[in-house]
Amino acid sequence: MSPRGRAWLFVGGALGMALLLAWGLAGVPGSDVPLGRYAGLLADHAVAERHTTNVVIATAFDYRALDTLGEEFLLFVAAVGTTVLLRATREERDEERAARLDEQRGVATSDSLRALGTGLVGPTVVLGVYVTAHGQLTPGGGFQGGVVLAAALLAVYVAGTWLALRHVAPVSALELSEAVGAGGFVLVGIGGLLFAAVFLENFLPFGTKGDVLSGGMVPLANLAVGLEVAGAFGVILTELLDQIVLRRSASG
Amino acid sequence: MTALQVVALALVAAGGTAVVFTREPLAQAIVTGVFGLFLAILFMLFQAPDVALSQIVVGTVAVPAMVLLTLAKLRREDERE
Amino acid sequence: MTAVAYVVAVWLLLIGLYGAVTSRHLVHLVVCLTVAQSSTYVLLLAVGYRDGADAPIFADIPVGSPVVDPIVQALTLTDVVVEATVVALLLALTVQARKRFGTVDPDGIRELHG
Image (cartoon, rainbow over all chains, first blue to last red; front, side):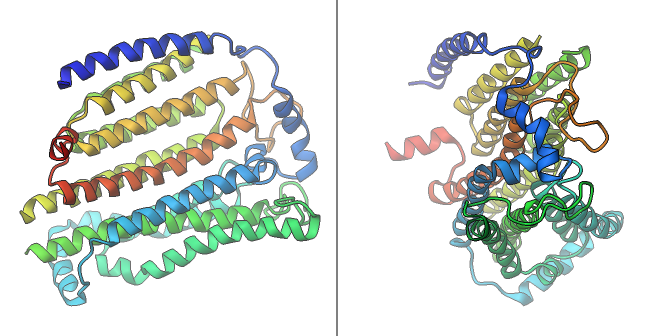
């Protein structure tokens, strides 16, 4: 079938789908009804029960921690899959070639870019750690903080050389961080199994509301997820950068 | 639903359409970053700051960076042949 | 008026799928899929939104004041980050497809197999 024919067939199918979706969405209650029962319960009681002020993070890492465990392993598998796909095509690494290429690249990169990158790395790392640690108090948590930390790695590459990135964050360290994060979350769950007879039950003391160490296992889970997300994105970025740098060396 | 939210929704719809109809992948990466920011603004207006924070870091840092690195990789492949 | 949000969600889904169907470049296809993914975020948040309510973070508002639904936000926030990793996996597949088939045109790959 020709591309135009395919596009018209899709438009026909899309119209049907739009009608079905409109019919289905017409039955959803609007925004003036009170919250559903589960959501209402969480909004009213989560703060008092878990001593966290951020109900969304308490939901994600405590009440619905099983869903977050699934999402976390989705992330882990995707990062591992990316590594497998890109690493299979890598040729032999050669530090000398890489050093020569870094010199050439260093000449080409502008000074203002490198200064900006160097200046950004420190504050970005601090911001990432802050966002991860304060998930249970203010908007934030492991997922956001982990991506910010991975952005700090990107700033290292922009500011410096590829070799500098390898020295600051070798792939083995990133993979270790990713694995520790994924396993750490499961260990927290097993701790719930051992000490409270329910997997992923909150078994640590809750602390006082407003403290950094409140919410029982929520800070631990945040830390685990932050490590895992930072490791996963760091590994992905490093693999993609490896491909570019080494390919450049192979061709010229 | 306030007027501000309707404006944000319109911007998101326009941004999504722009992303799809920008056929050149390099330009599309930039438009995707902008679309991600519009989405983050929409999420903030829907009283979801956690989601907006996630969307900002992912949509402006992670996804455009990965797309640009992939395009650079594909261009190296072209130069090899 | 939440109907406007639902219309935008459906529009994003359909336009993203249209871009994927009529794409000529695998990277363009992957980015169109992210547009379709974002339609689910808009839909979830629209379902959870309540008029005149605040964010479900009780750091400075008293417990018991009306808030929007926290469950859909918990779902969406993990989803946003995880989908970015899936996009990375798709881009790695694109790189491999370029090696195997020599082209990034989806139509081109179809022809080589037939």
